[in-house]
Amino acid sequence: MEVNQARVNIRLSTLPTIYGEKLVLRLLRHDKIVMPLESLVFTEENYRRYMGF
View 1 (cartoon, rainbow, N blue to C red):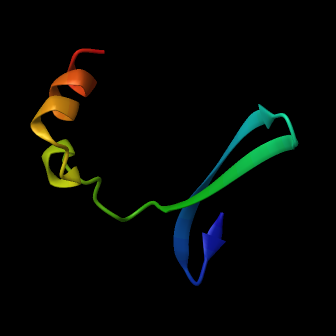
View 2 (view 1 turned 180 degrees about the vertical axis):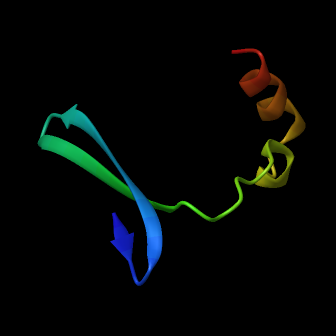
């Protein structure tokens, strides 16, 4: 999809809840650089947990 001459990827996630469904819609610009994992400011413990998966 294109928005203002920029390519955009659309991603939709759904999760059932006790009140219905939760939806998350992500609009991701195709030309943007993916951030490195280290720039997300994990604590050291959470970083180790994440990398253990």
